[in-house]
Image (tube, rainbow, N blue to C red; front, top):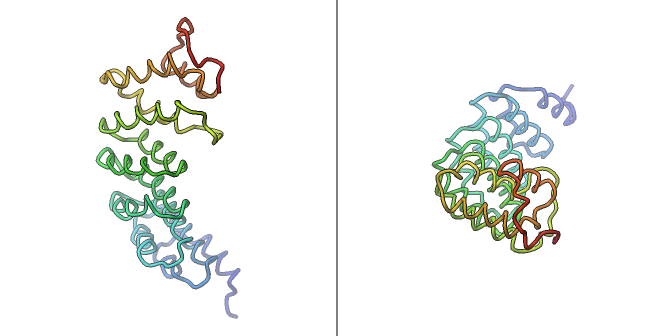
Length: 226
């Protein structure tokens, strides 16, 4: 009896052999492609990377790309960095966000210029993923742009409210690593404490005071303002 599409999807969801899964990443049915791509990410095998890079290069359906990027985040290596870098300004939000997220896991300090390029994206989602990547492993080349981004975030009211770690928290987490070696970082932290503390959301302020200390004796011009 011929295998139904539903049965094929169920089989591929449990499959972990990259050689088997690779045969289905270009299948006509999106359900089959996406399941095969996701299973490649779950395979834990470095042999899955080549098939995923092939998806980025050959698949015409742009909806396949976020799945491939997410899978590369799980099983990819530095070999995937060029292909992911090419997607950081993709017009599709999910594609560029997932590519930047994968770069944050697979890249290292040498990828700092790419993280900063991603940070220049107008999309707040792309900026969030870029700052997460910077906080993970960017080198000192990101100090100036991150300090400027902190000031930019806190100069105006923020409309987007997210649960969990905010872009600002990732930025400050990165700056905390360089505090002892950079006067620019120290000046930025002082600016936040003395001028913009009132613009921090409650969870951000709690994190800031835990990380950088509480200085309640300083008069804060923006205290109480949103």
